[in-house]
Image (cartoon, rainbow, N blue to C red):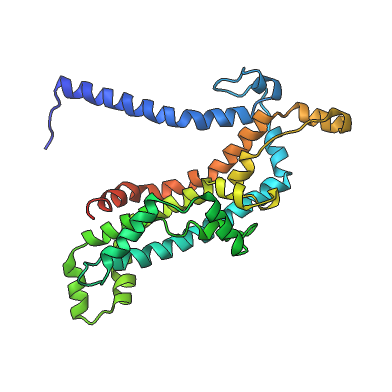
Length: 294
């Protein structure tokens, strides 16, 4: 059935498109401007002459990055952190979320465990005790220091608990009648049905581990162990013309803190920008269905 739109509804549609288009443009502009700065020449970027198109278009900043062993090393450390951290988060979220989605009658002390989780979400032991604990475990300058301390994302656990609680009880009852045990139901029934919320919390974990910089700054004592975002946060270009060759001076004249840092920031954004489109279709469904109860 075709419904003829009134003049008011057509105006509303136009205003809605303009509003959404403007919002999308505001989201894209910072990314575009960072790219434009990274492709501009030193003088134009430093003097604020760069607008929405590169001035003195060149790839000097990216060529410099490809030869920066510390940047590539920190990039590799962040990849390891994301893989290890997200995998550990995924396993722990499921192993916590499934039993805690049961009623107190099915899981003794279920409410006590929930209060412990919520308490850790609201309060922590403080920065110094946290650092001393990590140090006493011998994890300083170790990739596991960046992973283990954030292995229980409570907010994600609560989303998964609520998602599991929203699934029809009849599914579990039918599986029990057929003789299915807890592990079978978790692996064969609950996890396949929870793909939207699991994709959502996985995206949360990936973005967190990729973007977080403070733990790397505190727990790593040298730049050789910095994850990417910590390395970028510490970026600085020191130019000493007295100790540089003519070739190095010419090279640095094409670069600046602004262009080089913009290039590194843009490269750091690429992995998340690549991953997000594959998971975003689950995002709204997972986060809404996982936030109804509890």
